[in-house]
Image (tube, rainbow, N blue to C red; front, side, top):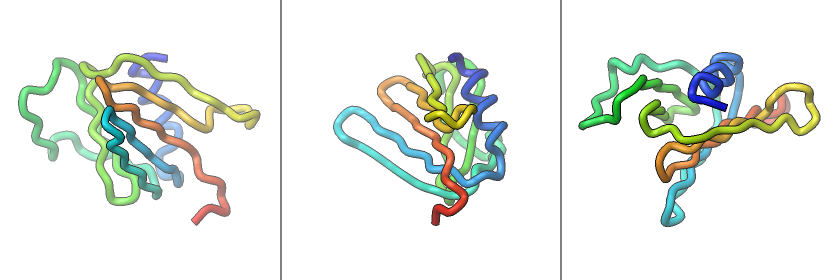
Length: 106
């Protein structure tokens, strides 16, 4: 899956409740849940970002900024639901996972 595929998964889940988690080298992690929203990347200030698109998304009050220039790989899993319920993407040493939350979750 390429960067556009990740963005398509996110667009397909706009407004839905998801969990977003990040893992980086050195055991740094973050996990949030809430409605997936698109954020205006114009509100984000980056210092010397890698060339490429900048996409900003919000989940549960946290903003995740995805840089196309840092993207290296991604994949999905559907767990037998018939559609991808989870997408996991690698940006440099950071792994970002977005997953659907069941309707009964939190």
